[in-house]
Image (cartoon, rainbow, N blue to C red):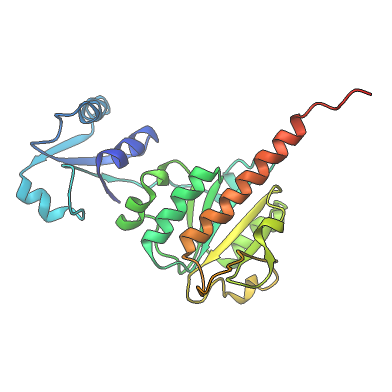
Length: 248
């Protein structure tokens, strides 16, 4: 995959991502952060190619490029080999087509303390350049496993006693009344059809109450609301557990 921009390159480097080659312009390497990146690339003996501005502009996908791009190998994860803590939180993207939405969800998941992001077949690739940019580097900070078959995903959650919640625009139980402190997976679908795979029909449905006239929330916004509610519930549970019992 192609990654570019100082922050993205820093995150990839910090994650130990395997990088095949770097392309930079003459103007790159004047700032402290850029100098540190160059030093780390030299230490790892990564090939660095210097090109002119015109050549770099012809290969970049960014309107205001920062003068550095890398050809990197995406991290590879095996679902059954990922360590599961006591109360795991999983974000599941099913059929989301917009790369910006998926990238934002990955970024939100990492910020809210989710343990991994799983996607089903038919979902846009997390390696898409627009997805990577929207994730703001979070792609390298959280395991992302893509294009899982529906049955494979459901079976994994059942085997590991992970409660699954399917989101909808208005049906089901309010998200604040749902127990998000247990090991759970939140399924989010695209804004047009939602989570519409028939195999998901058995899953309990949760929604975000909307007092206004909007038909639905943007899926990335909905994901942020629900994931941070899960973070709030979990923090509250920990605080309650740490409150000392009153002496009689």
